[in-house]
Length: 234
Image (cartoon, rainbow, N blue to C red):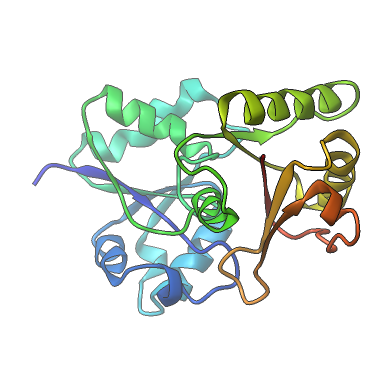
C-alpha cells in the first residue's frame, strides 16, 4: 500500500477527544510512526490523551510552525519518500486550515503523494454553521491588520463585501486582544450589521451568539484569552 500523508485533527480545547473525533482516527494514528507537528509538546499531550496506550517514545516528531521556512518544507517528507506514511497535527483543530501545515501539504501534492484529510472539528466551519449567516458565500481572512488606519479600512472593506456580494466575513484575533477588536467592530461597523461571536467552540464554556452591532453595544462578554472566531454579515 502506497504511503500517505494523513491530516489529523485534534481538539479545539480541553474537550474529550471521543466527543469530537471519530474512533477511525485512532486506527490511523496507531499505524503511524512519523509526525509533522506545529508544537511537539502539545502534539504528544494530545496523542497521549486520545490513546493512553500509545508508545509515545517510539514516535518521531518534527516541528513545522509559523516560523519555519517554506523552502525547508520538502525535507520534512523524507519518511514519506521512503515509503512510510506520516501524520500532520496542528496546534488545534484541522491541519492546514489557517495553519502552517498547508505548506507541507502543498509539497506532498506536488510530489504526487496521497493526502488524506481525517474528520475533526474546525472552528471556522463550526462557527459559520451556528451563526445563521450565508454558508454558501463566505471568506476567511485570518488576522486583520493591526493599527490605524489599516484596521478601520479593513472593517469598511469587509462590510462592503457583505452588502455588495452577500458574503459572510470571518476573521480571528490574538486571544488577549479579543476585547479590543470587539470595541473596534462596534465603533466602525453599521448598527444594523450582524456580528456573531463564537468562543471556546466545542468546550464546556462554549459561547456562540449572533446579534446586531447595536445590540452588542448593550453588553459584550469578556473574551480575554479565549480562542474566538468573529463573523460579520448583513
